Image (cartoon, rainbow, N blue to C red; front, side, top):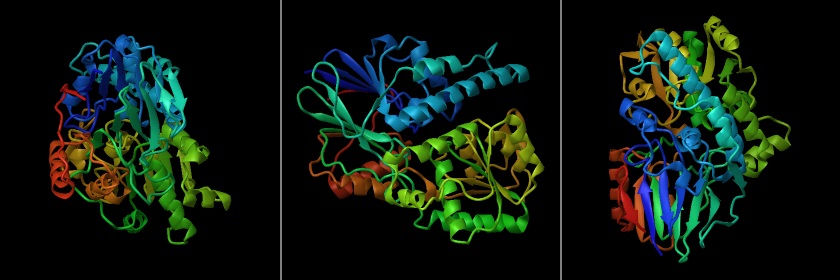
Length: 460
């Protein structure tokens, strides 16, 4: 049997997840993500893959974040027409988020042409809304823990990853009986709404993410940290702007706000969820009971909607979004994208950053080269849509709201293996995080591992 693995993304970076698995003449793409962040990373989206898309036999998706699904419309545009396997919740979120991504691509190209700041003449979208709809038609829903048979003796199954709704590990079985485990994004234990990651006991080959491989999340309660920040803007009269991923972080923030309200601890405050996709995704989260944890189910049994706190406004139209500007505060604006790379949040940041009464609160990972990263690193001024904006608002982070396992949690999950993998590859992390996790694995588990380079191919 001949099997190779090529790393086409998430290699020494946290974005663009793509892993190409070739087995006895068949080719499978594990995740199909968009590169985000720096100019150099985004330019990779325009370069052709190392294989013509029509030669890929199937695509397997771990979860519906754009850095894992966002390249699918381009893949289809360039000739892919095979199945795209995923869980039911992932399929529903993907049908929502891909057209939104296509719309953003088109809007950005139009705006760049209008303002003349693109290096290309004319600026073109990477893909369109129509490309996204074509990709969504190829989705093939699969159940958790059920073995799906492919060709020539290959098969796979989805196991719960606890990262966002529908997220999964992919356990891929080779014809010779060995298995390759793709972690996707490893979630956390004891977080609200969705079930915890399952413990895996063995894998011959393991790909482990390392987003937070060099740090440990604060042990403080996310709700308590959120409450303190709300109290601050109650005093200043300002607004909290929360750049939040429409899928996952938005729902977690709403959950904690609701929890504080039913405990009678949260002051009355207006909350705007300014993202049509986040509004729709919140409904998807409520519908997929198969993914809910016990606490979420208990709240719903008590006829409480844990994702709809009091005074929340779900904002859809551009006109409604602009009207938020009339609210001087105190209030909360939750808008995507989570790394402030696009979407409505950049408009809110442009308006609110110059005012010291406001707080910008990040609740997820900020990749290198993103506006979110520059703000969290203390930039005194930032360029937004061609304009230089002074940063006078306070910029904060709540690390405990992250959906990614931290270094300790990754190590705890790895300790569940009863048999050491024969080969471990550290992916989906920036080099310092990967190096730190590699050192911990060697020191605490006695595991050797490898950090692959972009386009590197290994035999398995």
